[in-house]
Length: 91
Image (tube, rainbow, N blue to C red; front, side, top):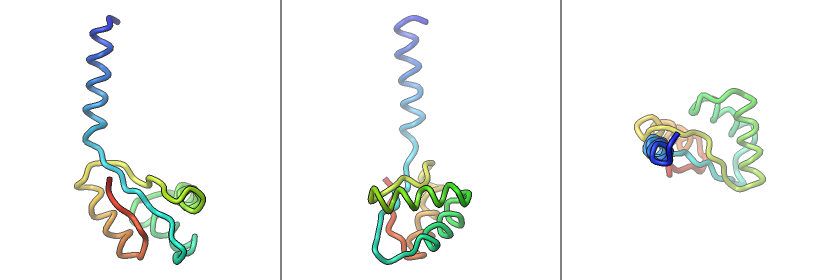
């Protein structure tokens, strides 16, 4: 593969990734692990294991990306998390 082909491939991947947004969940001192886990399962369609791992990351790191995708898919999911009393935003 030539250098030009590599650069074009990298640009193509970057363009595809550029259209994606993320829901970032933030830690708080209010919600229980169970509530966060259940909310992620419901709103983001996580598996129980995935939701548990995200809740642990949020607890220890302060935040975690819990869903990546197109804005039109993420908006209703983020709204569900906010309605559940969680702190989240789309970035």
